[in-house]
Amino acid sequence: MLKIPPADGRSERPLLCTIYFIYFFCGLTQCFEGVFLPEFKEYFHLNYQQQMYTMLAKNVPFILAGGIGYLIRFLGYKNCITAATMLFSSGTLLLVPGLRSGRYAELLLGFFLIGLGFNFEIVAGNPMLSALGPPRSASSRLNLGNALGAVAQIISPATVSAIIPVTVVAVGAKLPYMERLFITLGVVLAFVSVVTFLVGDVNVSSTFRHPAVPHGAAWSHKRVRLGFISIFLILGAEAALFAFYRNFLEDPAIAGLSAHESQRLFTVFFAVFAVGRLVASWVQARILPSTHLIFSLAGAFVCLAVAIFAKGVVAVGAITCVGFFASVLFPTLYSLSIENMGELTGQASGLLTMGFLGCAVIPVFQGKLADSLGLHRSYVLSLVVYLITIFCVIKMRLDTVRQRCGGEIET
Image 1 (cartoon, helix red, strand yellow):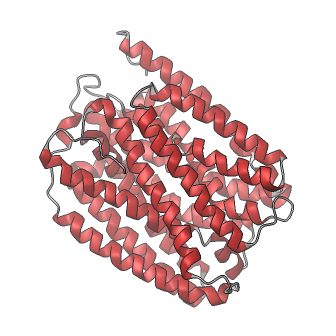
Image 2 (cartoon, rainbow, N blue to C red):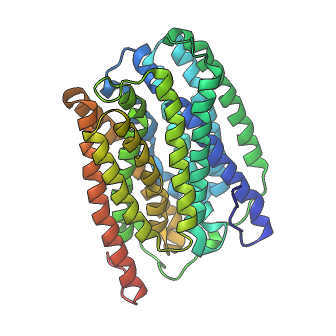
Image 3 (tube, helix red, strand yellow):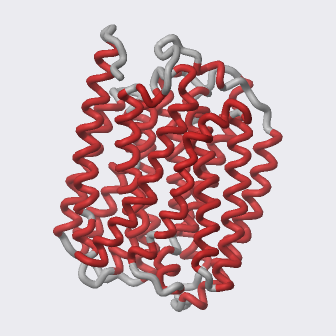
């Protein structure tokens, strides 16, 4: 049973629990939408690069993340979370007419609204998880919140396998099941937005007052710049890992599994992903998060290298294990990047969340590589990403050590 890290006061607990629930349910919703990417590819007659336009539409809104960081000052953190669930609901419901009309652009508009909602969720939700409890356990709470989203992602592929009979193979026959699922999710998300609006608020902003960073712009600090670069790269690689997982398993040159088999293994993949975040939540309460992060990057690199050059069961096992190590990268990088940012936390969060633009760029680029070089060779791009991120994390760690030793924060 998951244990929620304690907040500083009882008044904070209802809001903290609400944030955890939103992370869980929005993770569930996003995976229901993502698990059907191979079906979208077939239904709309797309190639790999065009399939990745869903990721582009979903993550382009993160270009607005910096603006949302400033908007928090006027709307407040809780109201931004309410806006997130409303946008999630609208985008999910819009997928239904997109499928019925057969217009890919309409489907992409739905993904755009979902991405905008996710934008609000991360910019407002991550600082709230950091603030609603002791500072020393902020990274642990962030990993737990993101782990709940991963736990939800275990449930969604299993639910799809349960509601769509094995005998239903053609995409056209799956459409009624998909539409009913999206309508149900949209209605529930609309209800969640009402609950979020009504739940009691607390003054989260007051917990971000810290003398370490009294003034200036968040972007002027090296840790934020390095954090943005790292988050841009690893989230792009993670998005490609999610989006191409079933394609990888079904590729005749790699494993040649059926759609039903790949869908079941997608559940296993997200189980491994969730376990990685739950383990990180426990480990990072005991060792330096930066140390754990470097080991995780190295583990992801090794597993992905094996997946690129292997075939069959070994390739399937290796690509699945990448999820264990990759799961901790974003929440840990985010926590390290906003540490001691004081009143600039909201601004820094907005800038770092713009790193989700990597999810719009890198999967499309990898899709192009997959069309020209083959799907398994396209993952070389992620190997380069992990190497660059290791370098950035080492620089961030040195900068933090220098700061704790009494040196000035470099700009």
